Image (cartoon, rainbow, N blue to C red; front, top):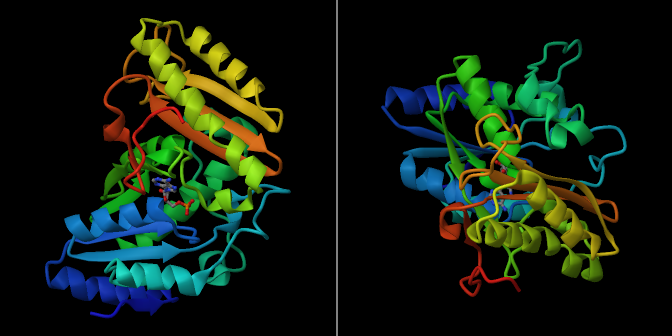
Length: 301
Ligand code: AMP
């Protein structure tokens, strides 16, 4: 079956109605395009678990703050569509900006608390844009399951809370972080990195692995982990850390004592590029990430 490419919400609704009338289970993967193996793993899981898979490609302007990379965000649409076709997605939804934010648009989904922590401190409008666009996309596609990546851990927690709080009838599936050969979490923004910056970018992954090793040795004080991560990142001249944190996976608060389910989270700028990553302190590494190429062994490179 060839993949449908649609821009109009009304056509999406009509197609979804046909599928629902046929009793099909619908999976949805929201993306901003520039697709890589992290995105494609979400698509793969949706194709595996659902009868029909819709993937949206929309660079959502409202989740970018002043001076952020909205204008230069990569938009390789034809390549993306080919990848989706190859992955057996059924429908690519590429709404245009005017239909998502028509003249007079003034209704927002604002989540308190969780959105103010971690990345929210550095990107004050980001999660307002994310919550609003995800709500709209869920309302348009009305899927049974929606797929998100663990790489954006805070986002996944916020979205799970949002669908619970707003009674949006969808199951949120959170999939492991997919990484490059050396451990760097895949991101559309990795394309911005120069070769020397790309080499340094692995420091986020390395500091998270070291944090896990510290925990395995018996360390339990969140402050010790936070300081160790800061010290590690300080070795890289080109890297400007934004935050290094230990948080509880449900409410994103810093626990008094770290446990195996606590999440180590890091955000840093390398030049103009902002990168984030996270890992739980305990548990099996293979449960939370996958490497795109087979060669990666989960070692510290
Ligand atoms: P984006 O296109 O950056 O908005 O991301 C779309 C979805 O892909 C989000 O749910 C992200 O968390 C997810 N994603 C992005 N990078 C990765 C990755 N390296 N591994 C797993 N999921 C990812």
